[in-house]
Length: 218
Image (tube, rainbow, N blue to C red; front, side):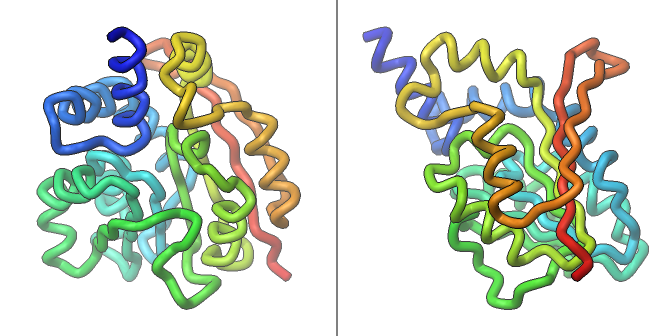
C-alpha cells in the first residue's frame, strides 16, 4: 500500500493529474516552489522586449512573473507543460496575459517542442523538472534549438529537498535528479559559459542551486 502511494505521488510530481492527489501536489508546488520560480525569473534578467519560454510551468507562477516584466514592451511569454491539468490551472491564472496576446500556454513535451522555427527565445527557464526528462539529450537539443544565439537558460531548485525526495523513493519510477547528468547534457548539446550558483534565499532561508547556461552568439 505504501509503495503504491509513493509511486502515485511520484507520478503526480512528474505530471499532476485532475485528482485529489494531483490538487495536493499543485498546492505543494505553489508553497514549496513558488519562490524558486521567482528566483529563476530574476536570474534570467528578462527585458520587456524579450521572447521568453518556461518549460514545466506548473500552476503558472513563473510565467506570471515574466509576463509582468514584458507586458509593457514587445516581449511575449510561452509556456510548455506536460500536464493538461497544469495547463488548465495556469490558464486561469494567466487569463489577462493570454487575452492580451502576450502569453501562450501549450500542452507539450520538451523533447519535441511545438516550435517549428529555431532561434526564437532570448530566455528560457525551468524549475524542478529536468530530472523527469527521460531523454536528456533530446530535451537539451530542443532547448538549444529554440534559443536565440546569445540567449540564456536558467534552472533553479532546492537541490537538498530534491535529494531528500529521491531518498524517500518518490523518483524511483519517474526521474533521476543527478546534477552531473544535467550538466553533462548542457556541455554535449552546445551550451557554453555554464555557471552553478549556490545561495540562500533571503526570506525562506532555503539553500538554492541555480544553473545558468548560454547559447553561443555564433
